[in-house]
Length: 380
Length: 257
Image (cartoon, rainbow over the protein chains, first blue to last red):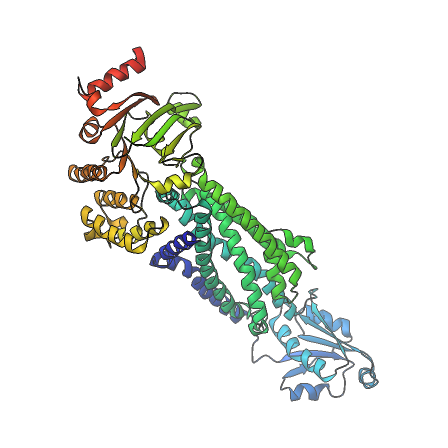
């Protein structure tokens, strides 16, 4: 136990007092923040609605108080006339019209009688004025008439609402980004600490001491995990801080504060176990390699597998089956996705942690065996 | 004479890669150590003498538990390398040019680090560090990163660090290789001093003059076999060590030599 600490302390000292190495761990996060924010501002400038623009709207079966509702909300608009709703829809599609609203017949009467009539919106999701106008009008209608079904139809056929899109983008992008960042952070430190030491012949000096191989493995893994976690945290903060700006263009209303402490604690848990898993995996790879260069070559295909796993979770539709949480990497991505879309399940979380913990233990065992193998440790 | 190291019938065969098979013009297997036996006594300097590739380094690595023998055993101060390698590692200090120190750290830090790993008590380690650093003149560069040290300084640091735990048996692979005469002298003097204080030293070398200068007993290894194992005085009774070696070499290699 004491030796684990001694080794861990030395490894940490190695990483945290080397300015160059430390910079290489922190820099990705900073670069991510700068690049994403910049990208966001540029995209934002392209798609944010023109303030001077006066939107045109077609309303079928207009209620009496429609005009006054919009006026009191301070919205400027022009009413356009079309022969029927279909013609108006076509106009929205062709970007001639910003918004078409179809109230169900006898709308007012139905709401008064406690029925639930439907209001259907048609807007063009590819047109910034149209999307913005829809976003300002639809909440007014839905909040005024509490017993109403609001149907939002983006034309052309893009049935998702804008809020859904941005939420989707977060849950799609985040798990993948986080896993990628974690993996590359782990790769940098693990290859350096193990393949690098092997390459320079310094690990043999450690192996000649009476310290148990398992303790060397655990000490290294712990120190590497802490270091990789720091790198990951910086990257993660970078991503999170830049996300609102990055998404500003398409959603405009991503509010990170909706994610409470629980979400972040859960995220940290998933990240922690995933980092340790990556470190163990990369340590084994680094031990098998003869040099840092070779270790990086071996790690590249593994990185692709991790990417595929993360991507697969992004595109998977519907609720994932429980058994899917038994697949490493993929389960971490699913957990992150679940956390950010508020579909968190304790069972799945525990499954993920459990599966990864078993793999980590197996990895430590393998690593200790490799440290004991002269073929592996002294193959020049 | 108390026997502190006993090596019995040690065998080690390496599987060669295709490339090695071509460059070394031999088959798939290379017998590095072929039924080697010898013993070393407490308080002596024992030298394994032999040409390159004779199996000296392999033998020392097996005794140091870095590699495992195919058969046979080495018992170090009553502990078998086969059964308790961790125990053996605590007894010995092993030094070879292949064991490097991390460039990033200072001799001072590394001494503390390895003292810690060997479980040396802090006050003992401090006293030992002061003494050894003084003796080898490491004090001046104790706080300079190993990467910035010269070859000689690095070698001195390596020596000191290999004996942080004050081992009874010191195994030294080619102790003066790559050192200038002054550093080499400091090293050989230190080895003698260690012997005089009751330690046992096992070295390997292909330099006859070194063996003649410091060894009490010599084992001549040729082709992985021990061809002679006697006291230096006995071996060099009639001829210089070099001539003795060539006689043995001719006998072992037959007409090829």
